[in-house]
Image 1 (cartoon, rainbow, N blue to C red):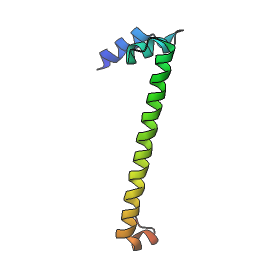
Image 2 (cartoon, helix red, strand yellow; image 1 turned 180 degrees about the vertical axis):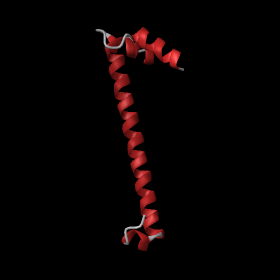
Image 3 (cartoon, one colour; image 1 turned 120 degrees about the horizontal axis):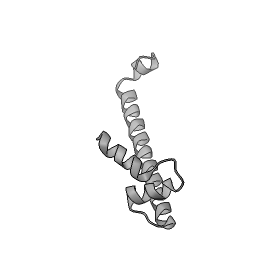
Image 4 (cartoon, helix red, strand yellow; image 1 turned 120 degrees about the vertical axis):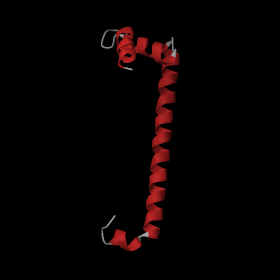
Length: 78
């Protein structure tokens, strides 16, 4: 796996001018600036959705634990 990541690093040439364009082309096959922007928006949307879903799930389980163990939570024992 390390060989693959080092090949990717050399192919994209991180840190050199134009590295973002090479990155998006290599990773997401985005060739134009519009395609790159669409990929960015999709990634941000997906990450936001996953984070929100996780937060809702976590809050749901916290509410259930309060219903099951109300005295322990009031005494500060989790």
